Image 1 (cartoon, rainbow, N blue to C red):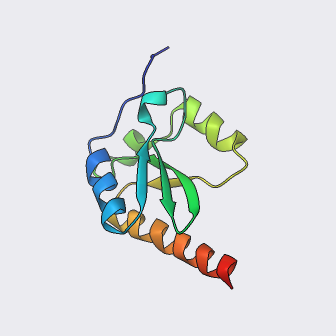
Image 2 (image 1 turned 135 degrees about the vertical axis):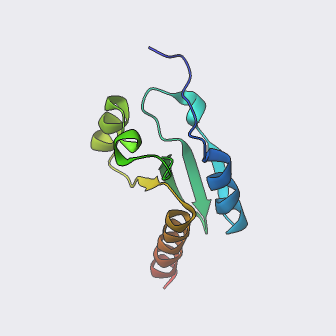
Length: 103
């Protein structure tokens, strides 16, 4: 078993995109063991994010068995992010949740 996790080639690009949208970005990729790559915060809400490189073929973007186990056992939300578009979708979702909770 690896001691530390790996990061996808687009990890820094995805982190920068979240930050440009006003989010906080906590990289958790060093945890390994199936833990999500990052924790995203916006408007008092947080969501774990698994980053995949959308430029790779679908077979190379599959979750590892440990990531699948985390996804299946985690009772909170988990977003898969593979592009700037999916960053924007995730931020939009956080904003919608925030608006509902603030109403």
